[in-house]
Image (cartoon, rainbow, N blue to C red; front, side):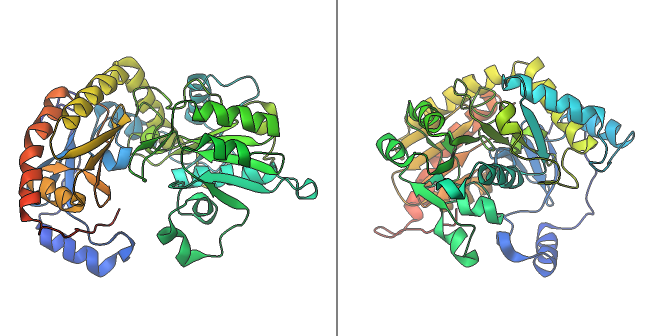
Length: 423
């Protein structure tokens, strides 16, 4: 598992138990909200992970767009270890240099104007929960400004406020009634957006690319139309960059060129360490949440902030974003040429692969058996979100193996049937 990005660094070794032993222990001790794990992983290095039986896999999912620098990156390991040995946690009655430095760095990367601020959380759902409360603060029931708009296919998290913004019925229905006032517009329909946004709207939430819905980019011009409409109506534009931000698309932010009122970040920001952020743009938006209106015990703690700072430093200093663009272009071009592929979507190293047949879950299982970790977001849709340090050679290995994987799965599928899968 040698990799130039992680040479000489190995995480601790788990107890020498077999794959099945770990999976059995999992089943008897952990809540089943994720279903049965596919494997028990014990170590990683660069873009590779290894399971309890010693089998190695090329990780093309990256913890679902989280492990920006791969596994056990020396800069990240050093930053977390050094900070934990200095100051691990303080309450938010206090601050720490890493917290302040990270906020300043994010405001600079986002080109945020004077008066902009940052709130740190622990996840994307928490960042969106804070943004939901921000939207509520922009409401005015007396004037009829109470509506919050999101899109069909949206995924903003599973906490109650974030779940109200999320569109998938299977996620929502077991927990209704959810916080009210949220409406879901047709995906990508600019006319429907313009018709819906008026003075009764408090906020509009958008993902530049819907990751959980199958890597669906918004149409050209949609974000700018949303910006213009919300500004005219006095509504907030909140852009969810939890999955697309921090270099995933080959840019710092997929919404680059359109300044929102608020932006949420998480996933790749900490390189694998839990950290989320809400950025508010300008003094008015930043003043909507005053002291005591929101909070978190762990958000912005020194170790999480140090992890994020190390991640940003590596991404800035090693031309990683150029690699994201080049390797992503290579993958999309070669994938689109495959006979079994109907469409390839996405930007950078966030890639959706639409197959001609409803066999995506079976392809995920076959790829895992062959040593590749990928994901399905629907019956016919595969998703790739690998570490941003993925090399062309590693991408080529997957491209070389995929045709045989697809052919094997298609041959095994019974003609005329659909293989159903869980996103």
